[in-house]
Image 1 (cartoon, helix red, strand yellow):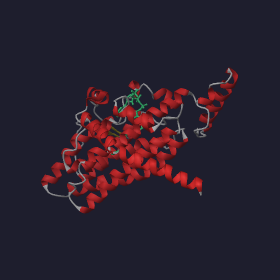
Image 2 (cartoon, helix red, strand yellow):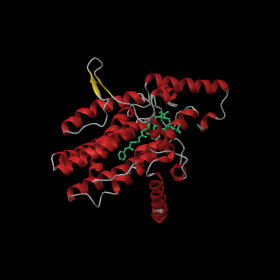
Image 3 (cartoon, protein in one colour):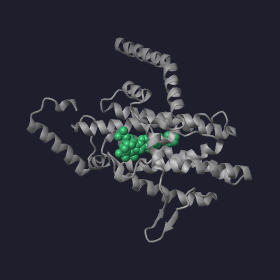
Image 4 (cartoon, helix red, strand yellow):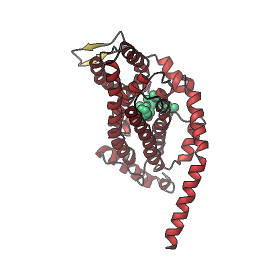
Length: 322
Ligand code: FAQ
């Protein structure tokens, strides 16, 4: 933080001690509080990656708004995609409280200097994919974000509470689509199974690398940015989701999946980590298209941002004059 610059060593130690006291006592760190530079940078990285995921995540579903099978499904999907845009806004605002401007974060996304979730580099090939995204991708997002509601940075934790409430509607909407398809014709059931086959493994990858391979986990856990590990959350998601697949009459595409009575958990097969790292590093099937669509939308929206800024200035000067 800027306020640490002119401090003597002992002053700096005192601030650092105060920071760790708050972490220990579970008192939230707020924007005006002193914080270590690494804590601030880690939060900006994680929050921005999350914000970018929300706005890039609008694309795979946005593709299906005009093709949704009924008016009711169109309305539901439109509302979901709008919510994702809203989640991006809450998160960019949370990152702004750490001194990162929205413009610089978006430029980093557009220039490939910042990541977004690997999951959004996969294509949506059928209507069932929209069900699978709501059920699995939002389901995974909720498991991760419920944990983040207890993270140590106030603005991020509060944004997570609101986002989780909205994500639970999304998850139910997705599950509802899957339920309708699995109760339908043979073709509809096959479409639902095909979507599960394609989205299961990429969804498990959303939780990040194994704990042993996770470069940021140890420090982020000490700072209480992370409250549960990548593997713990992935396991939780599997345990919640397998019975939901059973209820739908769908088969999880993992021949190693089995219930371990003694552990009280499902055992599962190994993720294809080569695929994960290839997608994280920019090799996903839709990456180029996602970034191009995002940059085009940003450029086309320039006049809207300029008009909104001009209007805000005009209103502010009218208020000053009054
Ligand atoms: N994709 O050391 P770790 C949604 C990177 S929800 C891409 O374990 P960390 C809602 C990681 O950044 C999806 N990159 O990292 C929605 C790091 O790279 P770096 C978004 C990944 O941060 C639903 C490196 O690997 N949710 O969008 C991925 O401690 C439906 C080493 O990994 C969030 O972002 C990945 N899957 O733990 C929207 C949640 N995994 O920076 C539309 C907040 C890892 O060193 C439709 N984020 N990497 O170059 C987090 O909880 C954490 O950042 C993790 C990763 C758990 C994702």
